[in-house]
Length: 249
Image (cartoon, rainbow, N blue to C red):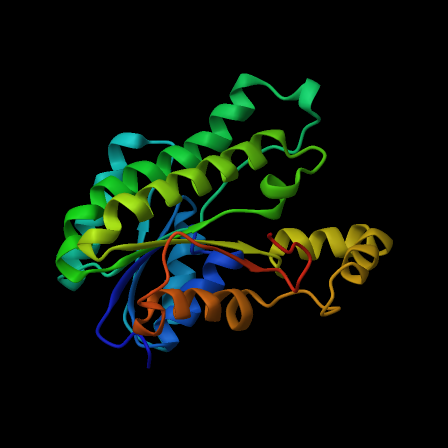
């Protein structure tokens, strides 16, 4: 129970990698507010995870900037404090660079960078009190570059830059900020495997560990570690939880 007594917000927590993180947090003893724009799926996820601990759900469209501070307010109102903010939600369109529109950029940056930035600002006073942490999600698609990922990769690299700045500025106050770049069996990746099995197999062959990560036991476990006291001397770092695909210098 590494996170017993702690409170976390997990955006995008109704499915995929973020659900894996929320699940791992609850099983590690944290109280979790799941945030997602899909109300029915979010409520179902909160009910499912409620079997393991204290979980609440809040339906919010992260493109609605005015609604973002209310997420932090709800977590504190319901659970009395905030220890960890996990910004995992991200929407984007897969388009070649010359087909990428300003609307596609607005979607990626609105749900990614802007939501991350504004939630970090809103959470800061409470993280000061708890000497808590922020876990933001980046991507190898941004670090390495990948076809059709112009808006997604750009938003993810902006989030990494924001995170490193926050780590430097907030470190003296005891707030830690780190980034996870995952490769996991999310619903989107599973759909890719079903429709393009050869391409999927080729990608797995590039992974030194020769398997895809699990949203809960691999990505979620890494997030639990970064949120725990065991990582109290780690900040400003990008943790590649991708089976060794990308090895940062």
